[in-house]
Length: 269
Ligand code: SF4
Image (tube, rainbow, N blue to C red; front, side, top):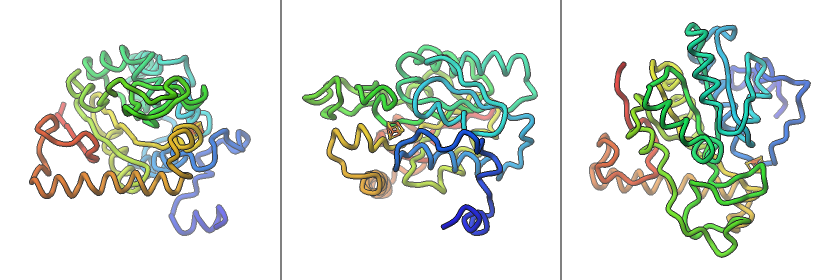
């Protein structure tokens, strides 16, 4: 489908919001991050926000590179520090809507301290953390979200440490809006991102976004379409389990499996 036909079919011309001179982008074929970028653009469109009062801030990593492709006010900062730059920006310009894009390595490892304190302060930022369970840009090292048993360049016999549950972490730290989405559920992603941006206070969306190039290849998960199907099946199974156990609507930490999607926690501020 051509870009023009896609724009006619979806009602949005993504090219209007992208820095076309930056193309071609650096993402590998099948990377989930492209799905997230399009969902973010659709979410912003649904909110009818003024692009001159929107700012996007990112750290370092494949997911953080997304801000370089958005034709708007963007800050590509240092590793793990996106939330500190974003906090300063919000303090200096409270009129701005500030969206932070980070990854699991950027946001939960080197930037983990900043994440919990931004959540504790409930700073009015929307933080999207793209979780691909690995350090993609630097070649597929183990990350704080890598599931035990998974192969990476630094865990050739399988990871052994327990991963962070990012949503539980920021909820405990004080975030007032916490959600989990997935690239295999792209339309739900639009809704979650829009709700996070509209929320006043620290809003956090963890997005399961596959890395077929390193995580997928090292763990023999197939190519990008197969990985998306596997991801979707995981969430469908969780939904069925929740429905069977009548857990739907229950708060997190009440026995709800880790990979539930949707809004997990919300406190009006
Ligand atoms: S290395 Fe992985 S996360 Fe990075 S662009 Fe390639 S597929 Fe995406």
